[in-house]
Length: 292
Ligand code: NAD
Ligand code: FES
Image (tube, rainbow, N blue to C red; front, top):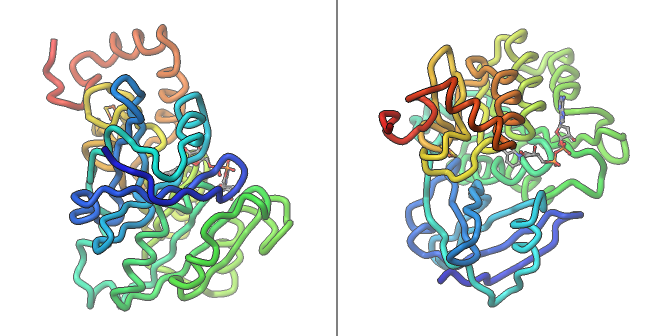
């Protein structure tokens, strides 16, 4: 059992929890995710790790209420337990595996959208702790929906906050802020964009034009997180990939976002899933891909 040692409401329908999971906390790296289950029969919910404390053996998760399972999860309190807390899963962020001296020479930018700010934070914190400076653009629809601003301000070299409605910070979305910086002559070598699919798509449209390499996190399309359900099948540079096994991070300029978003909508209905299974044959699953 995995007890909740802290619970905090960050914004409307957005919650943070610290969960005691020493083994996961010992081995996890920024960019990886966990799968949580509230009880034996509960839905498996994949969540990107927002922070970890190896000494205390805790993992921080941030989630948004989007359906019945997350609604039930939001009702849990400190002292309640998860029956399952599997991880760390997926590949660590590409940046964490690079030579520190090479990283220090790079001008790195993160673009975080809404709840996507949570998975951006551990990467920014890790770089800061290893002496690598990076800039962050974080945006939300309105001021009250901004999360982790203080934490991000402490770790980023420059933090640019945006709101779609102009209630706080730059008035506009993250792509508009990046374009404004670029117009002022600010340049980057590497960008990581994490947020809603539509945001990641448009960040990639812009950064392709600017010639700025961009990594995205395809966590939003995961369902069971095991490579078995086939939900997170995407096309990357013409190849079939599974976000939960091969990712969650990918080169955003190679991801077919239109196909991924269309497929995500289709996957929601039983009829849609049956059609995808028929069309995709042995490549429908991400496990071995060979099951009959
Ligand atoms: P949201 O719809 O409120 O959007 C958040 C921000 O994204 C906006 O304020 C804006 O700054 C930016 N954005 C949205 N559309 C854009 C566009 N077309 N161009 C440029 N920027 C745009 O999102 P939310 O309700 O805070 O968060 C929920 C979403 O976050 C879900 O779609 C979820 O899948 C996604 N999410 C993604 C990850 C990940 O790993 N990629 C992790 C957690 C959550
Ligand atoms: Fe099910 Fe990846 S989430 S195959």
